[in-house]
Image 1 (tube, rainbow, N blue to C red):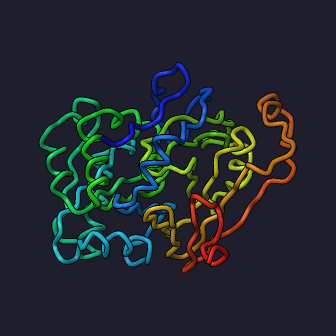
Image 2 (cartoon, rainbow, N blue to C red):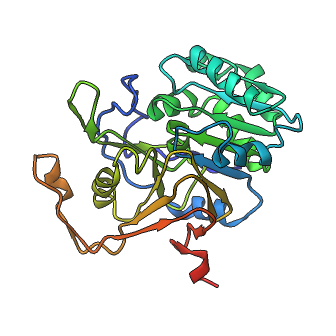
Length: 308
């Protein structure tokens, strides 16, 4: 038995508005780490490849997935574009990209709603695959559609058996215990309220992920999120950059880096006042950057080089 994805206090999983990162705030507590800590300490689970978005077909980030999933050698890959506002068009684009990257056997079943997510043939395809790929869009839409479904369970079981699960942009943000969205200006110039809620839970260690990190200047957004939940660690992944997680160790490959924000040392914050128009005030927050080729221990929240 594997642990189930976490749930918000007294709330069912919220339904997204359908626009990327356009969601309402839900009061949610970080998941209980008891069962989760045991799950991630046992070892033997698969590999997570978390990409910060805007990946290129020849870049090291996507190649990290293709190589580990043995896609060029013809191993079967299942792609999921549910997070997109147009899953069919997104599936077509990604399929062309994977063909250009010389991936052999890849399918993109269309999963637009809960009925699709309970299709036993799609779940069977995932079970028989070497790798699963989750595309970008709206992470809350992705979680709402897959969580508790046959497809969602198949992804969990695939990972538990040692499979490869890769997510880019929203696909990466959905794979943690908690998911972050909002608290930035949308295309119409309106500030979207911050959302923090339950994710699919494949990545534990009380983490949440932000993507397109340096390129979209999302450090402040992560500061606000971690100030609200000090026990959580934020991981900001740059574009065309992969964080490859095996057990409790994450290694960075690609064009950029991964910023970590650890709130356990915070001595003062006014996070509750920020929603009322106040500027964030925060003291003693621990922040670091993990560059390409370096490894980071998610449990210790420290560079592996400092733990030897």
